[in-house]
Length: 307
Image (cartoon, rainbow, N blue to C red):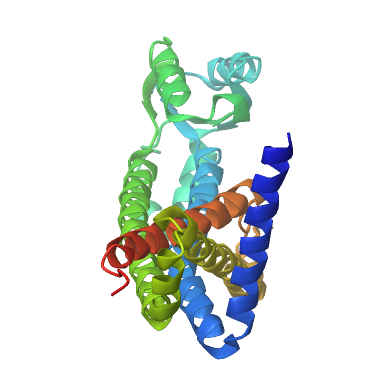
């Protein structure tokens, strides 16, 4: 037990000394931490924006509707009965019947060809039932199942659902997510190189001290320890800075995006990094700092030997 306490006490002392070393060089330490923070903030911000775009896309998924075109022989009574049966369907939130006359009036209003349509001898449009899926059945697979069920009904001539654009959007989001992962990997490598270079300079500046420590029997592991803590601390604080930068960016964008969403009748608001994701970012930054310092110290420490 005494050895365990001594072990942790020694690590606490080395950590405290490493932080004090950074405080004694505030300008260099601050610049390194800011570089790390800005580097990690870019993929983090892109990740948050992609997640918000995915939220919007999921909202559009639930806003789909199916247009059920009835056969020309279907009467208004048959159409109303079909709409009533569909309203009781577990996958349907509501169903609205649009008669031939109402469909023609809607087409005239939307197309702008009202005068031209007035010369027709008869109404060419079929009656339509607009089906709004329930939220619990608003995913692509459930919608396809509902579509096939509607097409099999005797009164139905055609049931139409357009989800192609939503699928394209999801495909583009998947590509962007993959690009964000690649970018995060490249910028993570940049953080490792940045911290590695900082630690390399620190090792070279303390060359004489390291030589003396080796003369009195200090092991490489003991000498390496403060440099590892320095890199870990810089990565951890830099990741915290990146979290703050992302939060500030979202705060700046939140107002204009709320106003834009309000124009479309939506209450959408940007969501920031979740606590779990932000904690993962800080752990990732600390790990990058440890890796960068470990590589730099391991490479240069073996080259320093007392004369």
